[in-house]
Image 1 (cartoon, rainbow, N blue to C red):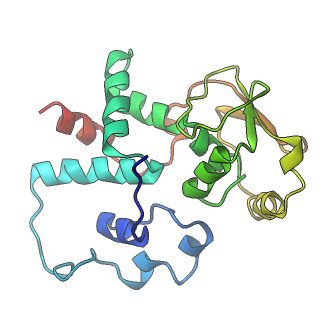
Image 2 (image 1 turned 90 degrees about the vertical axis):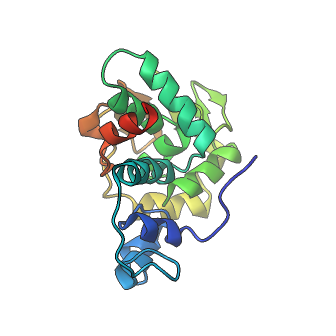
Length: 208
């Protein structure tokens, strides 16, 4: 399976803002965006005029990198979103938000989405009582996501849960912190998603 393996801090610098791809590091003075607030590369500090297409492309890249998906996956999600009722851009973000790896991250089991993806691959979670190791699995209203009993005593989870204790689960998830179980209450709406992206520009890009 293809995946991005280069330095992720370059991605944040390219988009000009924090995408929180490295967990704790993003909150420290070691963050690359704070230290070098310009795009990577030899021409990063040069002045460039961004076209309409370039602006639309940057919004798409920002969303794609934020959730850690590749181009073919992202395009597939857009096609699903365009067939649903409502605004395509908001449908797209709602679909991305309900990926299992993102859900695990939102619940505070991991410090980043990349880490959450790894935890899902290692079968630490169940959905409706069944083990699921597919990060792109889309959760739906009524589903129950739980940390396996055998994983609850691992130091990795203890430290992540403690570090994220102040992080509140989004409104579309009902989380029982004592038992490490969450129920999907509804599909997330735009107000529930804190991604700083103009999704309408992504729709315009794919509509060309």
